[in-house]
Structure formats: structure tokens, C-alpha cells
Image (cartoon, rainbow, N blue to C red; front, side):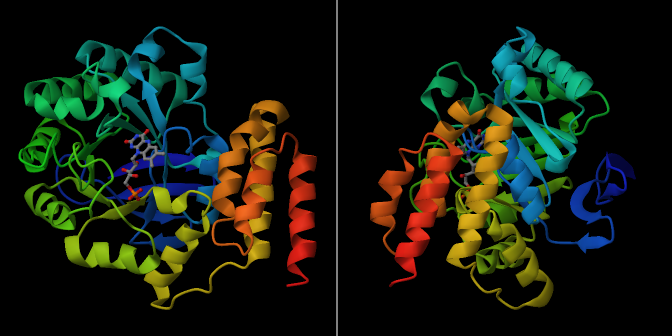
Length: 351
Ligand SMILES: Cc1cc2nc3c(=O)[nH]c(=O)nc-3n(C[C@H](O)[C@H](O)[C@H](O)COP(=O)(O)O)c2cc1C
């Protein structure tokens, strides 16, 4: 049994499920027993502290940081290290590292575990971004399975008692699926969880994620499997559990501007009933709350610039969004945002 102290009196108890630490993420938090939890995905440029706090508050079972450069960590780069800071209201949390040099990944994992004490250290083997794969990081590692092995081994060693997970795609391209092989490697090397975004690197975000790959991986390994790819609704989450037998699901794009999805998934999984969609007022309140957190975290000038894209996501589907969105893209202060929302609400009351 492996227990991680999260935030007294909240206690994350990682349940026993097989290999080595017999671990996972079917979790009990306080009195809440959440056997089918939904996790916030690592989202570069999006899953920063304020957004993670909102996701946990909305019912996410766990959060992931944006991917963090292992090279930046060992060089003690201020901006990189700032990406790894988190508050207890964002936990349980995984800090996600990327890099192609096993020695550097090992040292970065050691620093991460010692200085930040996350609940999990995750390795990014899925990123298709050119600036990452050019240096052989992210999904490029899936082309060289000896390197994959070396990176996981070094990271597990560096992380010591902090559990390690990996996040992968099915392979570099459609013709060379390696998820099962990588699953076995991860297990052999002491990783305890594996997240599969069920697409190859070459397919980017196109087509449909192939959930049968998640099922095959779950059947092939004893460590926990988190399923990921194309969950856009509570029904999708349930279908992924049913079709794949995965231990947890991870939600990325559908959570952007929509932290409500975690509560909706939990409600649906627990009761079988679909919750009502949040009202426009609820969405605006969530956006306001988000903006306040972002400003606290990053200051008003930088924070409100960052907030513009989230605001665009929050108003998706609003009547008149095509007029509102460009106005929100120009807000520079919290007061500007408040003014835009008040004007919108008074216009909307006349519709
Ligand atoms: C804007 C954006 C940023 C992302 N950044 C990361 C990242 O830093 N690390 C990572 O492993 N995956 C990253 N991903 C991939 C997501 O974690 C997830 O695997 C993918 O979006 C599929 O899940 P979804 O269909 O629920 O969105 C990113 C995806 C998006 C859309």
C-alpha cells in the first residue's frame, strides 16, 4: 500500500492493483470514493496553477502540469522552475518532464522530487511539437525503445520514492505501434502508471482516437492505465471505461474553458443521470473566478493577456459569441473584463 499525504485532512490513498507498488488512481479522497476518476491532462500553455486549481475544485481527480524541460530544470532556469510550483489546492498533481537525455532526466527528476514533492513525476513521450521532437524529446523517443528504457530507468532512479508515470502516443506513426512494447518496458523499469493518448504522433489530433489500443494496453500490463483521447462528454468518459477497462480517464481539450466537465463526469458515473448544462451565468462566474486567480498568480498585466484565450473558450456557444469574443480578446484589466460581461448580460436580457 502506498500512501501519499496530500493535504490534511484530505488524504489520497492509492489503491492496490498489481505489480510493484500495486498502485493506482482509483482513488479515495476524504470520504469521497471515486472509482472512475477523471484527470486533467497536461496542456502546455493552459494547465497552469490557476487552471489546475479550478479543475480540482470542479472535481478533477488529479492534475498534470504543463510539460517542463528537464534541461531547464538542471540549469536552474527561473521560468522553468516556476512552472513546477503548485499549491495544495492543485493536488494530487503530476509534474510532467520532457527530455531525451537519460542522465539529465534523472537529475531533473531528483530535483523535482526534492524541491517540489509532487504526487507523481510524469515523463512526456507523446509530444509531437517540432521544437520538442527535433531534440529527440516527446514522441521522438518512441522511435528508439532502448532510449525509452534508459530514460524511464534514470527517471525512476532520480525520483526515488516519488512514483513515476509515462504518457505516450501509440507510436511515431500509424505503421509502427509500440504502445504494448513501451507498456512492458515501463513496467519493467519501475514506472507505475501509463497514460495512452490513443493516436500516433503522425496523426496529430486528426481522425478518431483508437480506444482499442487502450484496451489492448490495459490487458497487456499490470500497472495502471489512464485512457486519453477524444473525451468530450460524460457519456464518452463512461464509454471509455466500458470499452477499455482503463483505470482512469484523462480529459484535455474538452476541459479548456470548461472545468465543469469534471463534475459532470463524476455525476454521470455516480448516478447514471446527465447533469444539466451550466447556465451562461455559471460560465461567466467561472471565467471571472478564473481571471481573479490568474491575476493573483501572474499579476494583472501578464495575467489578463494570458486570460484572453481562456475567455474565448468560456463563451463558446454563447448567443452573440462572435461579437463578444473579439472584445474579450482585447481586455487588459479585470475591470475591462467585468465591463464586457456586464454589457453582454444586459444585452442578453433583452433577447
Ligand atoms: C493545447 C494543448 C497542449 C498540450 N500540451 C501537452 C503537454 O504539455 N504534455 C502532454 O503530454 N500532452 C499535451 N497535450 C496533449 C493532451 O495532454 C492530450 O493527450 C490530448 O489533447 C488528447 O486528449 P483530449 O482529446 O482529451 O484533448 C496538449 C494538448 C493540447 C490541445
